[in-house]
Image (spheres, rainbow, N blue to C red):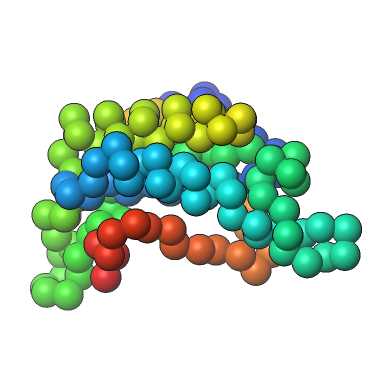
Length: 136
């Protein structure tokens, strides 16, 4: 951000976190448990059997409200389902702390900032994790 690196990890997961108006701390804790426990890293036999901690990885968590952009009508996305900044920041921070409480190293971006995120997508795994069916 502004030419400065504010969060960086090696091996691990980039989490683009969107918060919906209907989300609560329960969703943040559920997603923290789900994401940190996903067995999507290879074991010694090459099978997806390890979670991020077992793989020696970390999380880079970036707030991404635009994931709730509804493009069904017109050509401009509607972000009506996305939480407002105050609620989103609180639940973003709740999620980050819940992941850290599980023992995972977590780096973050800067909430509500314009950032250039660079990543190497190493492998075939990109997943959507959600508790409520908000994504279209």
